[in-house]
Image (cartoon, rainbow, N blue to C red; front, side, top):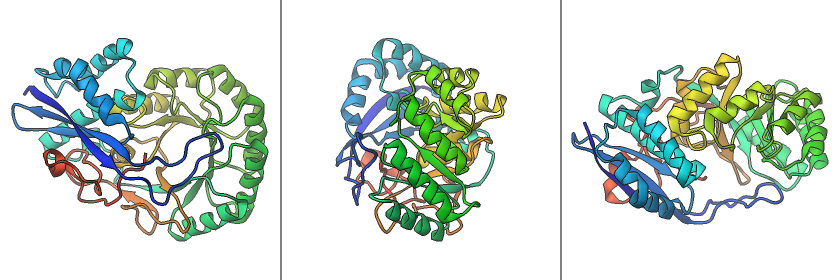
Length: 371
């Protein structure tokens, strides 16, 4: 089998409704824009697709295909995923590929492999479970009182755990974190995502509050450029740290966080930011060797497959927004996400796809991508 064509299909992704905000200093929910679907075709009629939901990625992917990727991929065996994954890293040396596109070819090749075998990709990756609990990952709300209301709604909807995205003010965020623990009691797992909003002194201040309130993990409090800063944070606070979400280098960079003693809960794994399925699986196995978690970052269908494939992840991340909130499509009343059943990975439903890729749209979800 050989790759005969590699195509980019632009897809309009609507503005998130209702729109939401993140912490102070960050942009909020994305506006309407052009995402992209990568389609890989073969001489035996088996195809694979992968979507980059980032607005603006359609133009970037089309340019990469025309200049670099098409001549690199056409004629190759699509089942030699390991070789092609290494080729993407070689190309990255000169192209400095956007992090969210680095693993897109790999994701499409794993989709193709699943379709060839007529199996969902999570089974092709090995398969560990058929369901996993989802936690409610909040956007940023206006007041402590509104957060407490959102928490009540999340628990009523069946979500077993809650993660805060707050304001980016260490003292205000600390008061919110303590108030939420007092509100929900001791038995609800709580997590905090700093969205890289703090320097080391403020990260330590908030970390102490999270330790006292028995938070399960403390995620990305600082930008992930300085492993030394994270090591100092890990030495200073008792709350476990979840790190290496957006840093470049996939498993290689995650290894530095682990070796330094900075990943005291674990590292992030995802298809979009850690080099596709191949990079994410490397990350998960690396973490497992140190008896750490590899928590899957973000919603979307590829990450559902990843959650079902690895042993050392705890939850599926489900973004909740607006007020009132609702459950993400595919999460049941007990807060469980179930393993996809169709072949390959599939594209998310709810978008106006071009005819060439409509056959790949998932039949099990109805929610468009938000990222």
